[in-house]
Length: 192
Image: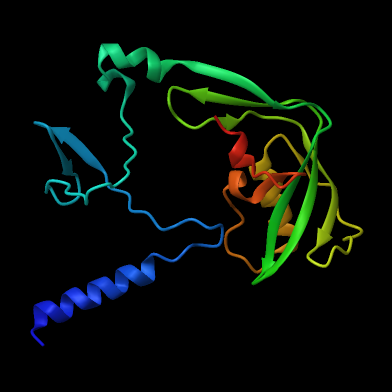
C-alpha cells in the first residue's frame, strides 16, 4: 500500500472518530478565523484560501460596519420576547459522574425574557432563579444542600456543579441543551 493511500485512510479513520457526539449530543465543529478578501475567505493562521466541502454550514461573524447598507437593519435589529411567566419551573440535567445525573428543579421569580440581536440566536436575559428541589436519576430527593440562587442559568449550573461534581475540572455547560421545560421541551426550543 502506498504511503499516500495509507495516510488518507488514517485521516479518514481519525475523522470518523472525531464525528462522535459529545456529552450533550453535539457533533464536533471546526473554528476558522478568516478574512474576506477579493471574493475569497483567507485563513488567518495559514494564509491559504478556506476551501469547504459542498453543503458545509458556516456561521460568519463580522463587525456591523462590514455589513452592506441593505443588510444593516436586519443585523442591527433587537427583539425581546417573554418566553416564560413568573413562577415557571425548569429542569436542569446536571452530570455528577459518567451516566449519573441530578435533576435540578428551578423556579423563575420573574418572567424569563429572551433577546435576539440581528439574526443571532436569542439568549436569556438575567432573571431571578432558585433551585427548589434536586433529585437523582432514581428520583430520590437530595436533602440538606445550601440554597442555589442566581440571575443566570449558567451560574445555577456552575454553582450546582461545583457543589455536587467536585471531581470535574470544568463546571460549565450549554444551558440551552441541558435545561428543559417540565414537558421536556429543551430550552433551546424556546429560542427564536
